[in-house]
Length: 93
Image 1 (cartoon, rainbow, N blue to C red):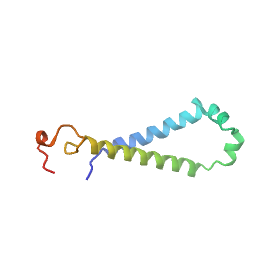
Image 2 (image 1 turned 135 degrees about the vertical axis):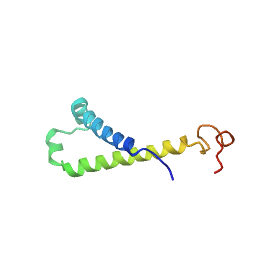
Image 3 (image 1 turned 90 degrees about the vertical axis):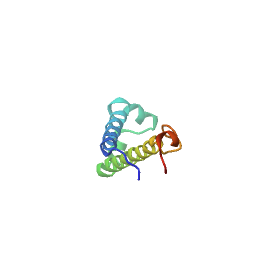
Image 4 (image 1 turned 30 degrees about the vertical axis):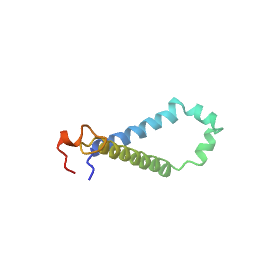
């Protein structure tokens, strides 16, 4: 079983959600719309907040969780790529 910090996963999810909102909003929203030939009216017409924000939050959670599991696996002392080797750490797995 892989152990990781749920608090860190939830924090990474919230930060990804907030940074994405800033990136596609006040920072580069107009440039993004211009690059894809969107107008405010196009976005407002097809906008469904629950679907848009719910899917964004769910995918941010999935990516944060996958990254946490990846980091937990490679940093485990018994891992083949972890810190140290099995003889030094006394790992018998």
